Length: 137
Ligand code: THU
Image 1 (tube, rainbow, N blue to C red):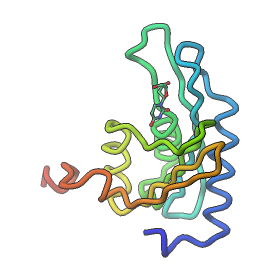
Image 2: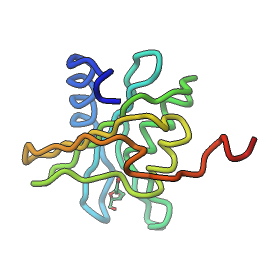
Image 3: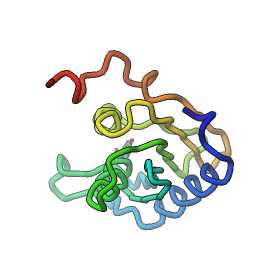
Image 4: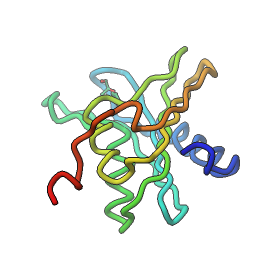
């Protein structure tokens, strides 16, 4: 988990998440979120939330970043950073936790915010006793 993450990787990941919030499409909630994932090959992919007039189709920033990484051929997620321009850090929603688990059951989830506070927790703590690929074997 976090112990394996170099300070340089963490810095680049957090910067990518912060930058991605700038392209959030959130005209309905006005809640802009940026996320970035660090893959097994060491690459970083970023994403933002993308809302829709049909509200149920809104896509979270975490899933945008993760799906972008998978579409580029990546299959392992080591860390996820989430940025919100809020006083306190925000955690990924339940759906995103499940999607992160598919590719990064041992990933660390870093939440950062405008206020400067931060959290860093293993996904396994955010989604205990998860259902995953191994359950279909
Ligand atoms: N949102 C995210 O992008 N990530 C989360 O973990 C929680 C929620 C987005 C979805 C929606 O566009 C807006 O924030 C309000 O829920």
